[in-house]
Image (cartoon, rainbow, N blue to C red; front, side):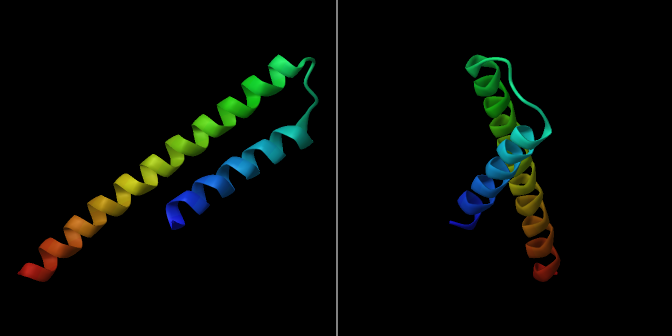
Length: 65
């Protein structure tokens, strides 16, 4: 649940930032910028999830010793 909320927050922030920074010439441009922002948010969340999993494995390994 928390991951979904984080991803939604990142996406909403990216879309808001794009809309505040500059206008779009066409609806197609806007859709592309929104998709790009969403893709970057997904990539960021994927990276965070991978780091969390890695740190969890290190912690578990340390606790077993």
